[in-house]
Length: 368
View 1 (cartoon, rainbow, N blue to C red):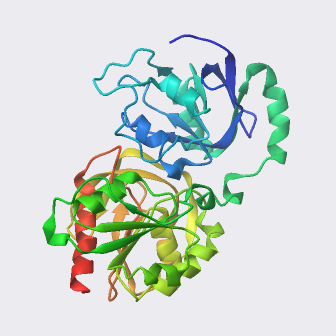
View 2 (tube, one colour):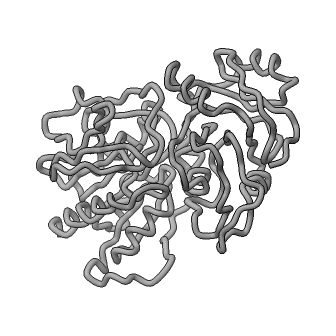
View 3 (cartoon, rainbow, N blue to C red):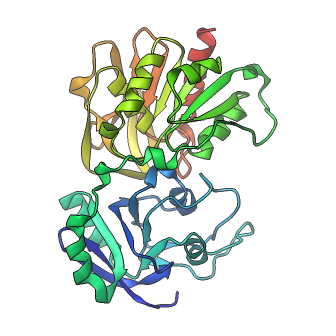
């Protein structure tokens, strides 16, 4: 790890953490959040749900297995900036074709290394997430004066920035599961991860991805057997157009909402959301499945959650977070509708929760 240009992370309350540049030297601005995963940095960096955010890794060294062609969750790096304690200059893995420093540079994404990420994480846990900027250390004072002129995270519709521009069929390999062959699943793309598409495909589904701006009529014209409302970035309060579209789809066919999709689904049925103090991000969050009684360790990335007190009586809470008691899953007690707040597709994280796709496809099968 070679120390180069002196860089600093400046938080909107004036707190400053000094370090040095890695990746590109660009100015970076976004909501500062932390992720507790020990591995999976490539999936995190390319996850569209992190659009508009500067991600801090709590694991002390990042990049030791490099970058490969298989672990992309989208076509590019989606984070605004990346903050680490230390990065690895010389990764070791047979599949690696780049290092983390070069990866950030090739996508023109600013990185900051050499700071006390433990202190920064404690700051966020105590004070809550806030906006921040990665700047040259000699421009810290100038950066502090800019915060009042820059937008807040919750002021921007990031879904419109990360959704696909055009409808497409996702095809990565021939289906290996003939029992599900023929199901057409439309994925409403709020910032979908490729892992979700791969899992649906692996279960024999035809997977059609549509832009978030697609109308309910356009979705239904594809004659799907079910709809997946994908994860994505941003505040659901800004997404009334997606809530209204979802209202028109309820009762027409089976629906699975994941993460942001879960929030939009809950809002479409009358619920409300609230912002978590510092969010849930990482691969180690315990969630209890109230249907089976089992506890699963889950991968998560969200800053908002459904308010259980506002959910209508025809919605049952199916999963709860054992750390703070927040809603992690919902199910309609009559219609074939379900939602989960965590990453049922993991990546990075444990794969135990893929059973939720099977639970959804069971709803699809019963609705035939």
